[in-house]
Image 1 (cartoon, rainbow, N blue to C red):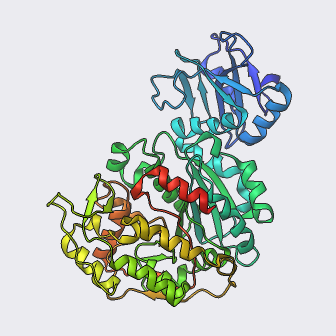
Image 2: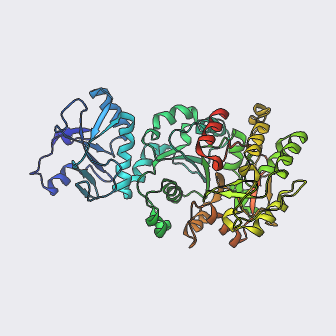
Image 3: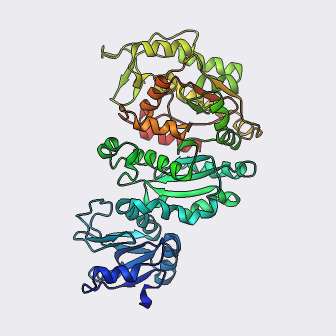
Length: 489
């Protein structure tokens, strides 16, 4: 029995062991859960397979992996699952009870994982095969951070992105003034499940970290819309959205602040959004948006708030000289000239520029999904121009003073019919209704969000004291978008 003491251990599997015996040996007390995976050392023969067991109630996976790396050395371990990301329970032999999950060696190729990847893979297996315990285990290392918080700050992180590194710096400053929020990082890349990196980045604000959560592979919280979860079961974006709701429900968050990993928010703007939930509710806001330079529909309000009169005039001139014609690849639209597709209507372009007139024209000619058509996203010249104008004197704007929340513009006349949801604050219960809507969701949840706001007559609001940067839209391809983001960062 000594080899089953709390902590990691290797043991060869004994086929004679009965399920009852294994259950007795692995039961680690009330609330304990054990995960066993088949591994081998990379320098050893692939037939020399061992069972590695993690007692989740005794230590975090990070602690386990750190001790393995120290004792075994090398670069990592081989996993004997066949297809590492498989969520098919019939493809991997396993034994599972309320207290443990034993995954057996599967037929197929092995997968070498570095130590950092191996850490993420442990949470991946829990998310795939035991979602009933995965969230509890993900939250466990951050119990001290689970104090009363009203707002969940969610970062939707993708592999190989760099802009998100600004967020923990902003959180450090916010944490000194305001603490009624917790950060939850949603990832779908093994390398991004990196608690040590986040501890380093947050520094003195480590208490703000509520958890890292695996959102690759299968949907872990299908109850919010079972039809959608089944049809988009391995869609990492929707897996993150569903996890936001599951975490917010578990942690009793009233508001969700969702931030894509391609958005810069300075400390004052982040804090204003985090503590504006009650004020937004008082004003009847369906959603609260920050001012970003190319935000839809915030770009003009950003220009009036943060650009000089000359720069603002140059930007609006770019808008008014844009084409009212649009071309599409099926999901995104660009401005085009001399379009030959008569099925896409041309929009009269106001001159001088007036965004209310523009949106009214767009709404009259397009279905809801295209109400976000705007030169700031469809005209590359305008998109790059507003970024360069916003970057002028960005240091002084970035460090503008932290002030009280409450400077909110309410679109009570519903002149802005659509918002793009790369960063927004919304009540948890409203977001639940969005995801449960019978028309949710084609593409992303953005269209359903706007539809719910229209149906509930809940106005869009903007926080007028915020300043944010979103370098580029993806209308001109991911390569171009990545290049602009890298240059900006």
